[in-house]
Image (cartoon, rainbow, N blue to C red; front, top):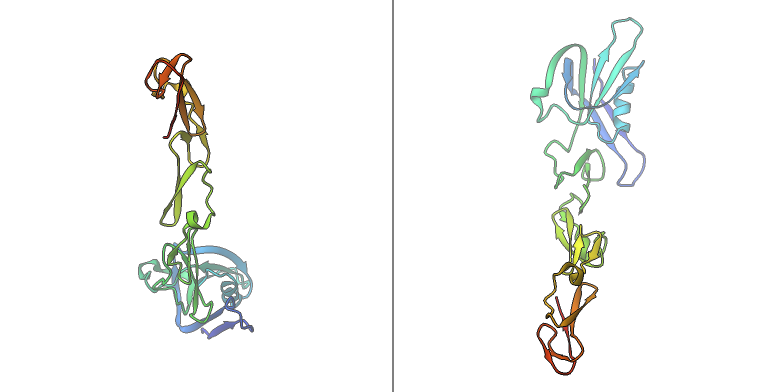
Length: 232
């Protein structure tokens, strides 16, 4: 015989849980497979529902009765019910299955968030994955705008759905989180003239005509010295 188990915290906070196991969702000789999150050995069959209530992701149980006559049981806590997973509810001797009312069957949470039944006035709460926020995790967090990224100060932060990426600015190289200045002068990546000196700067370089030469630094002719700043 199955009874109605109704668990409810005596508090007003939205984090309190209200979970109800009704007799209409209890089946002897049945077991829900591939959704067990924890298995516990118990000596009181009714304690299995209590354990489910205390496990935030649990919404149903499988109870296995050991045939040793000592009243020992194996309690399996499941993170889903048979609703929407009918093919996972199989016939298996010595087992009984009991599901609670779940508001997570249709999974109202967005962006791969975890739905936990029995919480808040809505009857569920959503645990957002990294990069999302909101009551149902519907909003992308712009880490770049909020300044909570890990990009280098010499990199651009580019927001993506649920995350972001970092790209080193021109004149720098690296993975975006660490960017090192490129020495264009040493690497031969400059466009200074043959009769000019190349001076490396942070993220760029400049060209200066050698003594007795004049020009932009990219082109130098004999005459007075001049200098051009090269902007990348």
